[in-house]
View 1 (tube, rainbow, N blue to C red):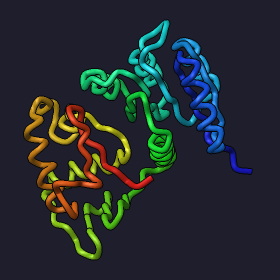
View 2: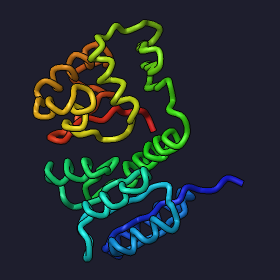
View 3: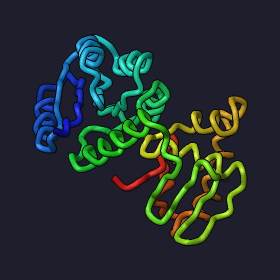
View 4: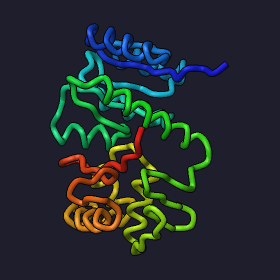
Amino acid sequence: MKISPHILVIDDEPQILRALRTILTAQNYRVSVANRGEEGLAIAAAEHPDIIILDLDLPDIDGIEVCARIREWTQTPIIILSVRESERDKVLALDKGADDYLVKPFGSDELLARIRVALRHSIQARGSPEPIVQAGDLEIDLARHVVTKGALEVKLTATEFKLLAYLAAHAGRVLTHQSILNNVWGPEYIDNVEYLRVYMSQLRKKLEDNPKKPVHLISEPGVGYRFYVEA
């Protein structure tokens, strides 16, 4: 018998907890809820949920700290659901270990799509990394360093492939500019956001059908980038 994925929701708004419980149980997810940060941390440690949905404005601990504390012992995907929409809050949450960030009010279809992506990422993380990432007509062979679009191989420079591979290996996650720059180029480059934009533009020209309207290499304005694979 297949066990349904388990989602922990940490939020202090009763109406949000009710709405999420209704939405998620209708999709056959198992749901636990907590309305305080400490309670959420305790449930996370005891029940090991598959995904955590976390509000930032909690009555006892700021959600950013909750996120950081969870990341000390588990890589369970964390989706932030918050009224805070500033770039600073988004970047801080993502740098502290969140996988995704949705601003309230949210659409249930979008939330469910983000959950599906997070679950897929979690399953891959628990097993061996997928050597091939498929996104539409794009195929990225991480082991052989080969990228094809349709039936044609796309020639990338070593740096372009390293950038694409980092994004694809974390498909569905929002990666901050600083995280990408640090992992692809090194810590001395973390302030060179324009440098990153140039390389992303080059990748889009080679990989996207319409580089001005990308469907895989998605910008998160002021925050970073996401490699999108259909949920």
